[in-house]
Image 1: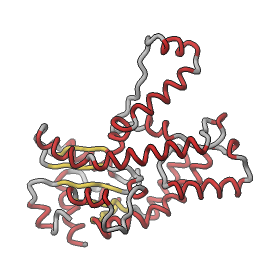
Image 2: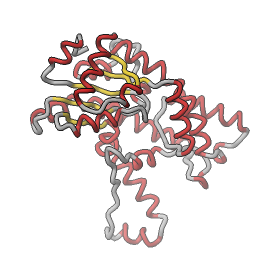
Image 3: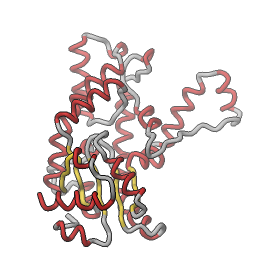
Image 4: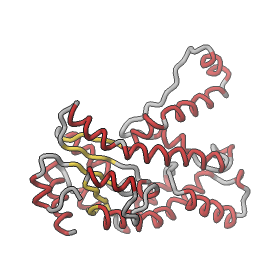
Length: 286
């Protein structure tokens, strides 16, 4: 790790951290807080995915839908309108919309093959966006004068790396330039995440083998054809299963590559100084 002790961390003139864990436990909360403190550059992996690597796919998806409308079709064909996503750090809906959900097309579902193809594109984009962090550390320092850097990762980071492999290329690169910090949730947090997701299910990235097994199990248990699957019901069922799948992967990332903090502790962080002390305690506890 780039900071070997709490004292080393506190004294560091450049503090560089990478936050990982399930969406909804405080990654973006901390990143926004640090950015707003004035001394930190905030790099959002999801934003980078949606703008640099998936932006054209997202815009083309919008255009396909617009071409189904005769009025918009004519405007598009004559270059009379411009269609693009308005993705932001706090609104990643364009990226989620592109990923989509498999199932009944009458309910907005995608054919499973198309869904998996989009998942594969996301995987490539996520790996590339994470590897971009090294360049952005240099850019933040050289262009903007930021010495402190926080990388706000996607919840699916654990799906695209192998935390048990000491030579994993992505984790090797990331850990060489950041202190990797897992925000660990409790059982109560997990229940709350599932409750929130059930109310507003959103597309996510999962490993291909995991998704294929979840899809086959759903078709068998519900005795339904692929084109009749309720897309929201499928991803609700998959989400709870995914939390159990991801937990040991996050834990292995923290054990082998970084440190961990509790989501309850994160919620109590109100200043950049609070964050410095939170990380110091995590280093002391390691």
